Image 1 (cartoon, rainbow, N blue to C red):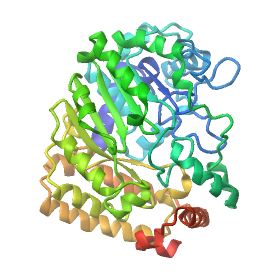
Image 2 (cartoon, rainbow, N blue to C red; image 1 turned 180 degrees about the vertical axis):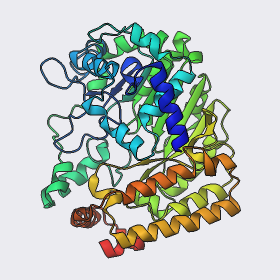
Image 3 (cartoon, rainbow, N blue to C red; image 1 turned 90 degrees about the vertical axis):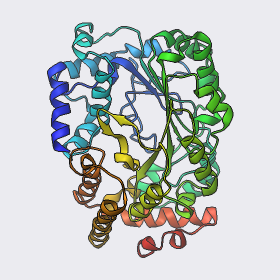
Length: 459
């Protein structure tokens, strides 16, 4: 892994500066409430009082929100220009520390894989820097959109909140007044009155995005649940109507429940469609984490995606957290023995993404579900499970030598996850974990102790 990280860092440094990230030059991202953010790593969640970290600010200090601010006004705001200048000077913008922290722990960060992947597709950072004005202004041509078109959703994941799921609102109204732990209360704050779930109906916003279609190369949809939102379908239909679908890739994070043949027919028109299905465990555990999912529907639709045309590439995206890390070996066992034809088989930069198993990312927020919270005995148990899991993979999974030795998404990534878990201790968060889970279970009429007996001693 370190070899890959060093090689990719050297590539970035040779073509730009050591702290360069391609995203501020090509990419615009939204939060479900319409706020613009640098990217989904710079602002991973809207929860709590620190929700403005990583949001693009306008000259009045307020977040750029597309209900009132046009995309192109925000694109060359003082904030965006400052971020570009900081990277051009070889410094780290304050909103971007997460990627560098991950890289220091041996994890491939979003900065690293986005920048090197776009370079492989023909982007030349040196030309971008030459075309950037001294004040940080860059041309109004967007190549990459990350659209979260409201918080409308059909599930209410345990790690989510009303910021990202409309389905959460009713439970939040009951839960929020009951919470006592200060940190849990802070992270579960939400202002219903100020939350705008209609910003994406702003005609000026879409007028400007439609004019960007000729420049676009990739559009990423997440949510809420993107497949529920009519503007999502209208936008990709406009791309097809305009004739630019052959040079635009689509990428999704979806719970997979609403995938159907009609949508697959529309996807057939695009150069490439990457569908990341968010699954964090299997059977009852996934039903709990992504409540109230029905496992049979998710599994059936994943097999449907596995048998689509070759331009559609499905993968499983897993958020590593307290609820699933002890069960991950069993989950991967299910994935391997399901004999999918193409789920997580895509090769990028000569390595198999997800190592051929699942794409995984660490859950940082809410912090009371983070894997660093486990007591030492639990961490030792988890390491032991993964060593046994490693032996099973070696005996039963058809994984080549790159998975074990050099693929940064292979076993090295699982080792980095375990090293992250052990790198700090936050057992002080366990009372908040217990309070949150116990009170949420009472509202939903379910039992984490029953579904996750391996966590019962913490509840």
